[in-house]
Amino acid sequence: MTLPASRVGCDVSKAWLDFHVAQTGVSTRIANEASAIAAFLARLPREAIVVFEATAPYDRALRQALDAARLHSIRANPARVRDFARAAGFLAKTDAVDARMLTRLPDALDMPEAPAFEPDREALLALNRRRDQLVETRAVERGRLLDEPEATIRNSLVTHIEWLDGAILALEKEIETMLRRPAFEARARLLAWVKGVGRVTVATLIALLPELGSRSAKTIAAIAGLAPLNRDSGTMRGQRHIGGGRRRVRQALYMAALGAIRRIERFKAHYLAVKSRSGHAKVAIVAVARKLLVTLNAMVRTSAPFRA
Image (cartoon, rainbow, N blue to C red):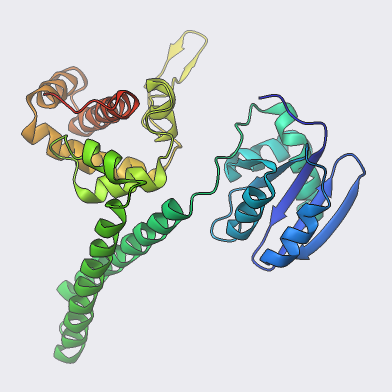
């Protein structure tokens, strides 16, 4: 992308936003509130671009205000930001220093512009995140129940697990209602064509992988953390391993791959071939998850249903 001349870095925290305007060298701290953010952004030139770390949920008000003000922005991966800060010599860690460092980030790295704020997708993301939290809590409580000999505590655990079951079911109903909205209905129906891709996977992909259908096969696999990374140096040729990416998307695709292996001959054959070559079942499942993602990406791009 061609970067505008006016660069503004923004360090996000729960209570404050620290801005640094590269052209003037002026740093400003404001409250992380919609009215204060809107007032500050109104003073920026229209060609400004605001660079900030992804700091959900604390960057939500900023993203909404940027969209309303129609300003360009870059929402950077925190891991890449910290790696750049160390490489660029920003060893001190303060909010003002971080904001100044962010103004230099796009000069060194090719950073795509942040997508527009989508209220429906944000709502789906929040529901999905809350469901995941409750499912994780339920798994912990079930583990405790297995090891608890005291009857009173066991009764408490059973009661809590039953409540969690109901709460998770209620959230899943809300997610299903969201998926029937016009913004998601066509994509949700298309993704569900593939046997093994359940409603949880569909919701996860729609909420957490909006790039699906708009990126190349290699890029979409890298975003999900399913692209094998080389480990070569000199004459040494190391094993390829996946890494980085969006962990929750990768988890959902891994579970979907297990279903696809059982129910779709094409994916089963791919699983058996990779397992035979590698000798590792988990490596083969990850390979199927990557193949499944590439297939889903092509389906969304062409709006064509899956054909086994």
